[in-house]
Length: 299
Image (cartoon, rainbow, N blue to C red; front, top):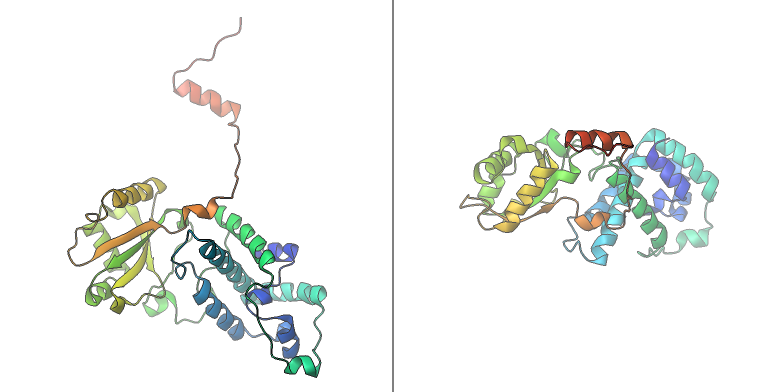
């Protein structure tokens, strides 16, 4: 059983409900095992477009924070339910927990009203768990979903948000402004990296890769791109360089970097208390020795 599935089961979370499929609807379909991968993918994409962090520009507001939690929750729900093996395990637990029954005709014909605030407490608690999973680099699925068709990502040449794992904490989010023609030219990873190396303080050794927001439209005059920086120190230095002089950070006269920030907002970890860990005495002793500090001798 995967960590994501174990967390969902232990928390008693209705993953189908997170994807907008209520128990009455599942009962009408004949049970959770009748839900097709295509239906799950369609529900996931509909909700992802609504709650994706790029959709909520104001990350500092409570509304933006709730959107981040909801997006992570539906991402995990799709990762579990989109995997046939994990879905089978979850469905067995789901049937025992919720005991699906077909509704009577009056309920079947009744118009169902979906409320955004339903089960909000469970969603928020689940979101806190997911943020901690993110902090400790535990996978919980990506924005497209691994089971999506081949119309996404680099297989079609669009290179939309096909990020590499392990670089989230050093990835910089950039908003570029320019003419539609210039931004279309930068809509390829190789061209974007060339632009960053040529017109910004970045050097080839800084960049592991690059990807884009799925909702980019160069015709609107803006492009959201992400640069995976190889080292945290360089990522921080580049961010400080942009903050110190945003107008001169990029030397290109046609395309400007109008905004830059960490891919994961700093407030994302505001409630995670890692605590203080005492250094191993042997390591302390070795550090003192390398620094030329001699421990006092006992007489």
